[in-house]
Image 1 (cartoon, one colour):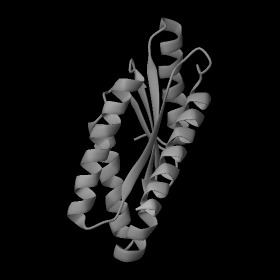
Image 2 (cartoon, one colour):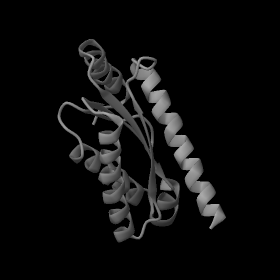
Image 3 (cartoon, helix red, strand yellow):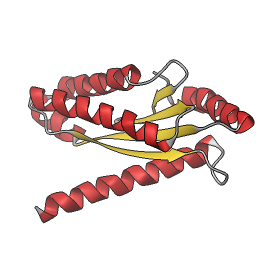
Length: 151
């Protein structure tokens, strides 16, 4: 698992290669929702276990050519080489399903908000792609909150 500095180095390499070879690349921003609730109710060890499970799931769901980085307390970025947005969304769905099952089994009320961005003519650098994936993740998080309030 890379940290932010590793993401900048390895992620930039993946994006530069995709740009140079005119191939695809996608970026996912992953945020663990309600981690604070796990920490408050079950203790910080439980929160750490949830983050470790998420990290392990992200690594297991990607290839060696991909980059997985923890960039904040409960935020992760994936840079997926040779991957269009449809395939990135399939990765996203596998990760979410595995995480949801495990959190429910542990009795934790946690879920993921994930946003994606694909390399395009107007987004050919890592910072832009991460910013777009972050924006998509935030919109998804807001949408989830709105739908739970409407229920």
